[in-house]
Length: 366
Ligand SMILES: Cc1ncc(COP(=O)(O)O)c(C=O)c1O
Image (cartoon, rainbow, N blue to C red):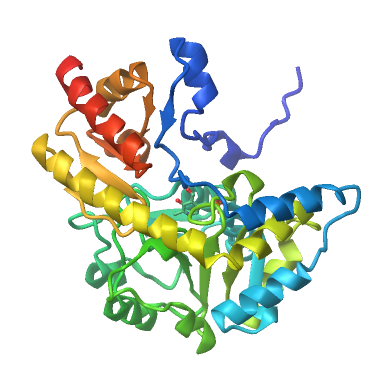
């Protein structure tokens, strides 16, 4: 047997990503046919019909490689975001852009600041690049922005902030963001992960692109996976300074965004109704969930996203198991280091009702 090491040492410390449990898997394991998945913050209404039409049309051309530059989509996003086209980033999911932030900027030993119980990909890329993750505790499920400055050092390279944050659904306000940017050490990059941006209705939510327009070392990431309901196509985007775009272009895979995804994303941008319908459904869904969670005597965090972080006051796994037996898939909090929580995505009115009924039963049974 070879005595030469197979893997890079940092790979031994990584764990493969655990996705929300797929519907088919639950069907097989529990012999159920009618299952609802409220586990991955997907949009229950589905994509715009315009996007579906664009997908069909683009399918006829898939023998050709996609446009490596995403010319049309880049221009459409540039207009929408009021940022020049050469400051737009495109990736197969915002996950790829998080990955490329690591490839381009994180060297071994660099400190990568994130919250405790972070979104998995921030931690993953920090470790893959042999950076040093620094976990800042949340305070009442919110970023403690005043306390954040104390965690920044001259070794800080990247700071990841989720706003709304996954899994808590809380945002960073404009004042807090300005303060953080002011406290960033020289050479550090702030990544604002705004995957749930379109769901926010709090007036204190900042336009973080303003920082990009001012030329700050800030990368704003958004996605077509959530409100636009194109998760299966894998397409995300972002905006940052020309200097940072140039570095991220060097590490990007060629043809990283498929032609079908580009076409669907472009069509999605033209359908404001689909976005509005989804926002309205989500607002109603959260109102209903808050009311029912209170009725069940459970604590929850008020969310600016399309999911609710629920404190069960007890271990989540048995309750999760009972929910599965009733055909309802949610996300357990233990993957975020909070073993007495679950995160539930808002669904249709019917799905939300079914979740609440199943939860009431599951709490009794578990
Ligand atoms: C905070 C956050 N960032 C990024 C992503 C990745 O989204 P995408 O599908 O664009 O890769 C998610 C998906 O769950 C998320 O919750």
